[in-house]
Length: 239
Ligand SMILES: [Fe+2]
Image 1 (cartoon, rainbow, N blue to C red):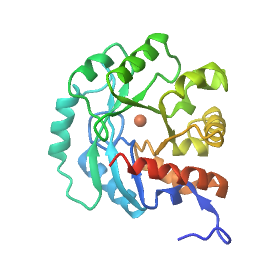
Image 2 (cartoon, rainbow, N blue to C red):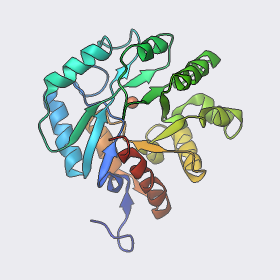
Image 3 (cartoon, rainbow, N blue to C red):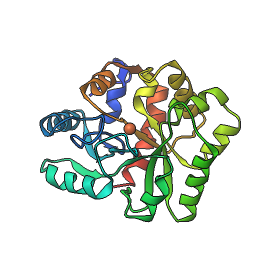
């Protein structure tokens, strides 16, 4: 345990009693953990860092990864058959493309019934994408936009209309954005949006040991620690 008065605070300290809503630990389905053994080691390591539960959120990107959507992912999750102490569930990180509405019309991988984690392309977005998100909310889904601080269109437009557009949705901070892991622009906007109280949720987006190493290396201020710490309660409501 750390003391605010005598020791540095690290991003990893936020994993104490943490419920993660974003990570890529279902083996062999995306750019995250490649196999079962790797996943089990990562899960054990996260447990050792204080994590209590997590949603595995594999990318669902049409044509990009060797997974064919929800039913295959559900089967693979069942086959993974985790029996350890963590509360592990299956969600997904949906890429907003033309196939997204079809996923929602089927049997999507949600968190706490109606919450759907989504991502845009890092480099671009379209108004059609926002139309799809709006239509999803009309269908009763709660949209959680992953790591808004990472998107070029957010960084380019700063405080104005794009922020107003995305803040209609629940926003999820990537912890490592605060360490500059996703670039200096993401760090700047993560800090700014955190100060502005724009985030509802927080995730690690863990793909590999390198992510956990970086969380253990990155020092943060008490102010940042406190601001992120309150988001952890929101994460918990999704379990
Ligand atoms: Fe992700």
